[in-house]
Image (cartoon, rainbow, N blue to C red; front, side, top):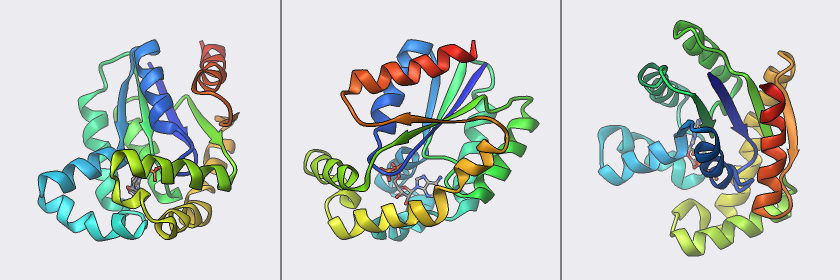
Length: 191
Ligand code: ADP
């Protein structure tokens, strides 16, 4: 079973690449951001409690996202593999994630990290905001805050996987297909 953490700053292209990887390698996919947006849309109690954080571009509380992922892993342990997109985003989440995987007799194989310079991120997100209507993509201030939070709290998660020899950086600039080929080349080396 192939368990991939797809990593990178907001706007790095994780969602786009995840979609292509899922169909090529027949994987399940969890995007914690997607799950959160769905909860907010449904007006659930969980959604209500997270809404304010998302609108400001801040991270949702660790305990809530950890629970989401724990449920997902428990229900998807019998498949070809999983892509974790947007998780773990803090070192605490990464530590808890290790425990969740162990409990289910699973392990993360690799963290693939998409590298994209800040200016390209802002440009991509503002463009996405126009099409998707995502509130957190329409204000440059919120976008810059998300990038700042990524640098403060999330970028260090790469060190956690680096220490386990599982972190691979991938150039996230180029066409969607070029980036996809780079990711596939890394995944195929694992087999
Ligand atoms: P992006 O990577 O473009 O910011 P996501 O869809 O991954 O978009 O996440 C959107 C928002 O959802 C984040 O800005 C954050 O507020 C929240 N979120 C998603 N995943 C997590 C996580 N693992 N921990 C905390 N907050 C999260």
